[in-house]
View 1 (cartoon, rainbow, N blue to C red):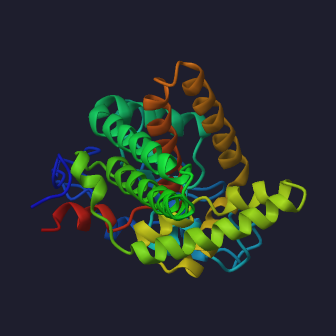
View 2: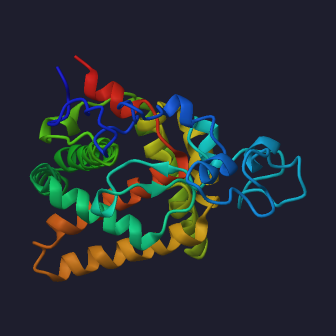
Length: 315
């Protein structure tokens, strides 16, 4: 039994085939070995300045073995961030459902393109996203009712429930976003099948404490912590990482293209504000779009994983 409403993707090489298993297409396993020079050379373009076709590609040399500066945020001798996870090098096409159904380049996502891709994804499958947003509103209303009780015991229970429900809703949203971005059209039930939730909670507590301390220290450090550790939960769910590794991976991934991702964060905040102004009804669109846009950018930076394929084929 599959978890997504669309089940396992077809093998036609479209955005519903994120592993490109269709006829005549290379799978992710093959693409994982591609490099910057090969990616462009296969498209009939000059693979790298001053390199002709058939010559060694830029990626073959490895960053740090040549005088060129490595990928932003990476030290010499390190790989392009996505290649650490078997992803294509920067510039190679990642066939998730971008704006208009096209691929989005691995490596440096445009903030506006990420939002455009998120809008297309939401527009093509709005019902489960509206429902999960409604579930989050109802759950928050119930926990708030208990936490505001005059009874100390009931209030304490409500506060604990508020924290737990907050973690759950965030995990549900990230899980659905990963499936959606990877081309597995999820139904509402697909959001609620979690794994590695213990690590998710521990990571959330660590990030929450660090953010609180940062906000106390003149606010700006707290904002920086929230920004650089935002993908911690994505790594926990997508890569099944422990809290420490997920935190380090989030920092390194976001640092690799901080400018574009900071712009995306600002645009996401503005989208939420607009949704709130639109009589709160707009939040049923704004919240899913910001979640999807962040995951589009996450997938562009880190490359594909086995998460969605495994989740969609789970019995």
